Length: 168
Image 1 (cartoon, helix red, strand yellow):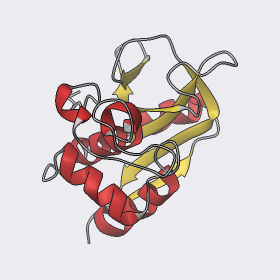
Image 2 (image 1 turned 180 degrees about the vertical axis):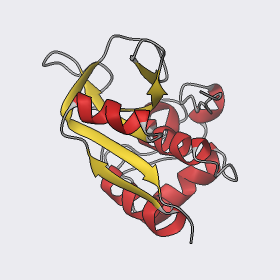
Image 3 (image 1 turned 180 degrees about the horizontal axis):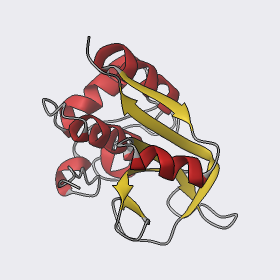
């Protein structure tokens, strides 16, 4: 597997990238910014870069997410992002029904955004947390790119697998 692009939302720069919503107005590093609520932006940017669309950085992609209406009260509306990715980049998405389905998708060269939480309590936020899954390692484990290393529970109902359509 080739080297994967990684977008980390917990950098100092991300504290200044505005991503406000009504309940979360922008306050440097503590509210309404990529640092606090941009996991969906970062996960979807990793999809773009790892499919070869490298023309956007975190700030530019954040602006696109705001303009497309993907900012929800507490995070990112991944359904809105998925429609945009398909329309503008020919990247289609569907929900995987099982972890086995996800692994088969990854074996075929697909990528995924997964909403994770843990054991009845949210690990990263009150509403959930998006991570990027870029493939499988030699042992068949998911390669998860996230802002920090923590044990995660991958819930079958929250997986969104993505693949790039051939350009015609």
